[in-house]
Image 1 (cartoon, rainbow, N blue to C red):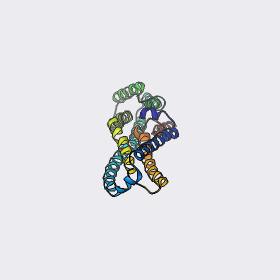
Image 2 (image 1 turned 60 degrees about the vertical axis):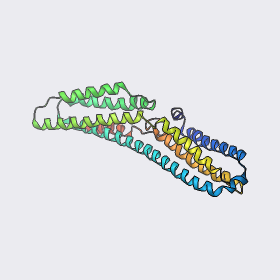
Image 3 (image 1 turned 45 degrees about the vertical axis):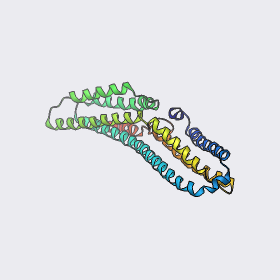
Image 4 (image 1 turned 180 degrees about the vertical axis):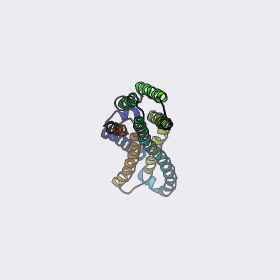
Length: 260
């Protein structure tokens, strides 16, 4: 379900999720109107209010817990991308201390081009680039075999290896975040809980039908907005709202500046 929505433009996905949720809750309200008349529901408003308070708190806690978790994963993905690019920039800069740095720097530039041009589109489809993975093996081999003639160069090589190891860990975390999302069972619980919460509000008997529709529709709209936000941010590298490879593009600009 979420994979299909990720292929749609943001505005269309929002219309489907929010409009669909509001529409479904309206149908639930219509069914409740048929099963229980307004006068019957009005006589039980006090009792329904106590139960709705419990239902609302439980669902609010669950929804907030999952929404915050999704946002933190999205924010973490941005941090991972920035840290990976920064570590590679450090390796590129320190490579200038070695006369044989040309091949290493070329490999670093090639890897970042692969990440931006190949791996990012692949992550949009829930895949990873094997060519980019193989490029990391070549960089690692060049780093470990670069000729070291002085103690100062040995220290620089050790720092470069540490920075590249950090970039590999950040890359692994980036790929893991990009391929994992909210558990499908949790999606079922959240969506069904939303229908139950909004549907329960229709058990109140209002004097004016228009006021009832406006109040319950507003609640459904708010929950639909949160659900849409969670769907949009669930996979940080897929869909209409994604983490862009801006940090890697900036790293290429830094590479060019160092080269000059």
